[in-house]
Image (cartoon, rainbow, N blue to C red; front, side):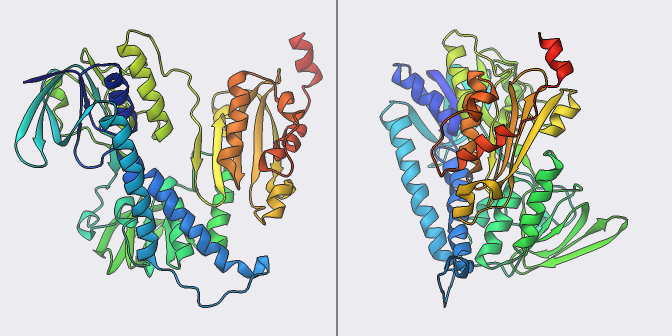
Length: 470
């Protein structure tokens, strides 16, 4: 038995920060990683996807070159070169993370598969052979999640692509079927269409991004159709025939009728499953929810004393920036603090082109929770910067409290949405009224300048509401 002050299962975003932080404080720290040093984000998820998506955007500029007064000829996509650009970036980033969070901090990183065998005790089957048994005064579970493979007859046998395999393709699929219209499905459907693949996007719900407002879903669907992506909503897939990479057929129903879709490749992008089964949580006294996530409280404590969980496996919103915040919560609490996840802001950005970003409430959420609001909306075509770069698709939208000038939420479907959202988020964090943004001097011509027009469109507080606030 090897004893440590801190034992971390998984070297993902939150795990590596926790490990590096306590190691720099002089504690004896060890992290166990099965395969991907620094986790999925730099290796197979966030950063590789944005790298591939940017290559696809460059390809789209070639397709649109006449619009910019530039002639083109003999355009060819070299997917092997696209892949190598991505691989080079991944190697560089992983080396940086390994050096900073482990080599320089003093935290030990062991490569192998870890499984709890007793409270706060993990046995590691080393990738190079042999085993080690590790025990920590505190243990952090950071095991992440994986692409969900639904129990549809024939799906597993078809060997479909997940995002991992899609990023490693050295060729362009002739006809890519994308099962799932969420983040991964929408981003990669657009990217592979821009590379030249025929793409069909299949969504079980009645509209894309169903959790968002209807105008957002409509904007995303129009984007897909304008780029030549076939969108099939309200689709229930009941069987899969063939093999991905050769010939594939999806069978099911839609609007009361039979549905049959054929392609050459199948990409599964229908949600995430936590990596919590088979790691011996029950032997550590760690309970899981009915959906398989580690059961935690607002301090990210599990049901076992001295064991914490962060990131996807803990049911936190599945974003790298949330895993980072989870690590801060756990670091403070292990050190004796009382930091909680309750009430924190959860910004998100979908890296379609244009981007979709939101912070705070959407109209759908506000209505569901019975929160009254004022709303203002601005088409991107009214933003001068958008005009200069010929990126006028989409809109900005803001929700303002009915009886005050507090910002409740901001949604943007447009070029640079993630960056513009951050400006609104800072205003929300500071608690300043929307009028402070409206009256600010913002550099011209930039995308955030559109906020002045947007906030200038906010309806005034009604006389009745104003009377109640006095």
